[in-house]
Image (cartoon, rainbow over all chains, first blue to last red; front, side):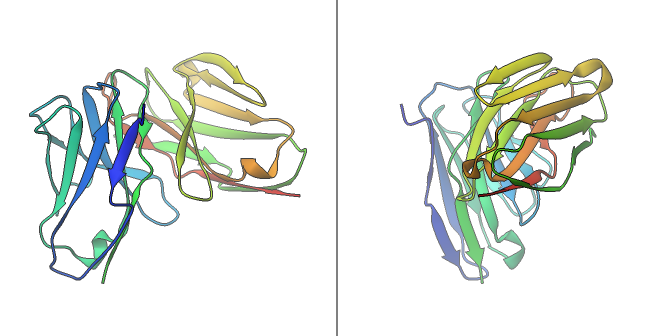
Length: 110
Length: 110
């Protein structure tokens, strides 16, 4: 039981490049989330999903897109990366109540 | 939206000391989570505690939902307790998405 996994762990992009972060969970959870964490701050919700095929905006959705084609996967896309998107990205999942987090992806945009 | 405030922002203690971390929230909640972010950035679930008191080894937590606060107690601190402690509550009553506090940075010196 791997829990929540994220790919990749680290990535460096140039401004304007695109990339996709992958989150996978093996706990059969309905809900999945993408957060970002900036230095000295708590986590802020980017997008979330309440089930396969659904997505919704969180607190800071601009510049990101998401897809939930399979229940176990939640993808976060950056179409045109900007330096302001340099951050650590965490994925989480839950069934009801308690959320469980992946190990994070450290993204740097130059 | 709901506001979450944690105090103190920083705490430096010697190994063996006890500590109390506080989380205040501005509206009624039906769940609350405490997390420990270790120096490697990993988010570890400590407690899922909508109300009442729970204990896990040297750590315990109490949530008084009617008074809109939660406390995390750490007894006989060890250097491995160092890191940032976050509390998080639902953005709105019954919602799954979480709002995080800014965290308390705990440093335990040997």
